[in-house]
Amino acid sequence: MAANENHGRTVVVGLSGGVDSSIAALLLKQQGWNVVGLFMKNWEDDDSDEYCSSRQDLLDVMSVADKIGIDVEVVNFSSEYRERVFAEFLKEYQAGRTPNPDVLCNSEIKFRAFLDHALQMGAEKIATGHYAGVRESDGAFQLLKAEDGSKDQSYFLYRLNQQQLSRTLFPLADRYKRDVRRMAEAAGLHVALKKDSTGICFIGERPFKEFLMRYLPPKQGEIRCLDDNRVLGEHDGLSYHTLGQRKGLHIGGVKGGKGSATGDHDAWFVAGKDMANNVLYVVQGHSHPALLVDDLSAGQLSWISGERPHTHWVYGAKTRYRQADAACEIERIDADSCYIKFAEPQWAVTPGQSVVVYESRVCLGGGVIV
Image 1 (tube, one colour):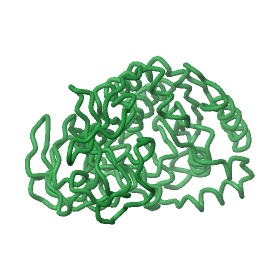
Image 2 (cartoon, helix red, strand yellow):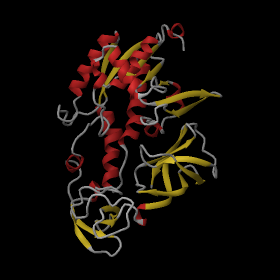
Image 3 (tube, rainbow, N blue to C red):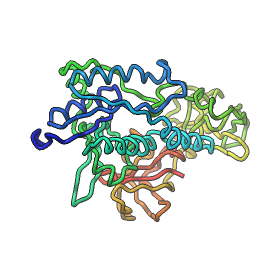
Image 4 (cartoon, one colour):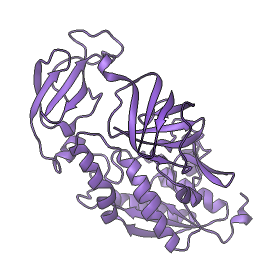
């Protein structure tokens, strides 16, 4: 869109202090938008420089905003985050599932609380530094994969709806990460080489088990071999483990085992949880049949178009981020659940994670694996 077409139109950009959101703001400024930055503070329990670094992030935001010439507002969504995201996050872990907080965080905070606030500020659109795309087709809005497939984040955005997408810009849709960093360096932005943030959305990088233990107390139980029911050791809480997990079991086995036949020295992997009896089941070998499934059921469905996909069409689906699309069919679908069958077995499909369905580059939506 030409710069003169955007003159006088206001877009509020979610600024995190990272290079991606910084370049998103710069690109929109260059396109003639009236750009306002918004820095969201959403976690206060132990906001220390060691983990959250929100203080440094805000300093980086202010520095970038000053360099590119935009105003910044700081807003605190910590109560919304705790009620809408973190409470659900803990509830799922307590039930033995493995939730994806980034999915909830996007739908409830970045594209709901943030969007509502931006509209109150008089914005016409909001924008973020996500690697994804949005386009209008026949009056409906579609969520697209990013051009940079290695950075595509559409998986985390599958719960967005038509109203949210109609107000959203993704300036990095056709950009590659390497070019984003180069652009930041050329613009003199000191965040050009800043490390990408990982870890829990807004909570940051930290020893995850220790973090969970502050909210979900340990409950020791047996670790058993799924094949012969031998007791192999003891776990300190089912909530701290997830399907396919290899590290941190402390029951022997060696590194590797991937693709090898099961043997005495193959690595152990979590294969199941018996919540009623507090037993963690494990198997040996990355390719053990217990870690592979041909189908799944999902609930809490969210379809971006507002309409259900067709059944018995060939789609692609991801059951985890950074996974290649796996060919599948939706064999059954109703308002509350769907049943998906894959062409090839999928590894460590985990309850609580999301299955996200694609038709080529278009993200159709998905649901939570049950």
